[in-house]
Length: 116
Image (tube, rainbow, N blue to C red; front, top):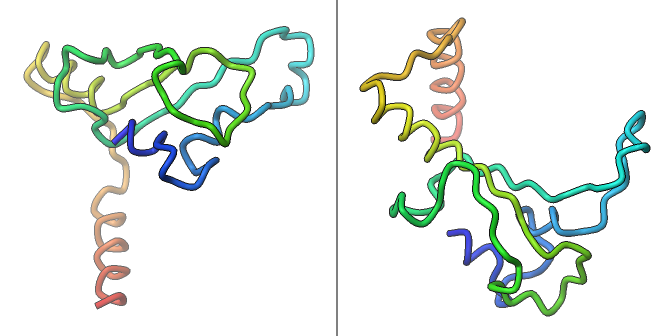
């Protein structure tokens, strides 16, 4: 899925590759000299946990992006799904604080019913 987002066959920049565009410093952080791109993926980016760690850095040389000019040579990626899978493997459970879960599920269900 990651390679697909970075494919030259897709319109660029898209919702994923926009992290490679030049960024301005957030207010109050102008003193920081280096800004680096970070992509946070909630969905699985790989079924093979040996390819990526939850926090990985990939070289942009491996991606074909002829329509994007970027000053970055690397992209940092945080995979939430890989992180949760690793936590689960270590502990055999994941303890999540989910306040108001029932209310949220009811709201989502009612929204889904509206679309049917």
